[in-house]
Image (cartoon, rainbow, N blue to C red; front, top):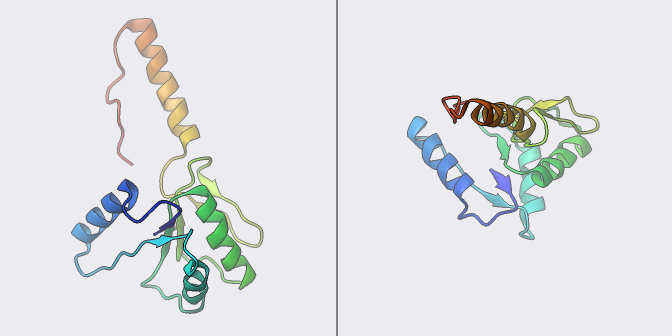
Length: 134
């Protein structure tokens, strides 16, 4: 998992906990992109990618950094780069195919939230469930 937060962030903690529950033999590491060695680590990943390894980017800036390496080294994204893109349901970068976001965007969530709020305003009742699982 890559991002700009410190390693002790709730997104990473919860993702790692759930991933290891589902795959106890798996390994999950966090790469803080603000550290000076991060570009070397991403480069090594691009050179040693395998079907058993993937980069999961958890923020928009990280999406661009990792995608730039994939583009520079002409690596196709064969599911080794997974993104969460809160702006759209897909992430686009030159020389790469569109990468589908792992979860719905804030645009999608915002529309659903607006509909629920309008129902509450008009009827006084919440449209249930308030939260949806992906």
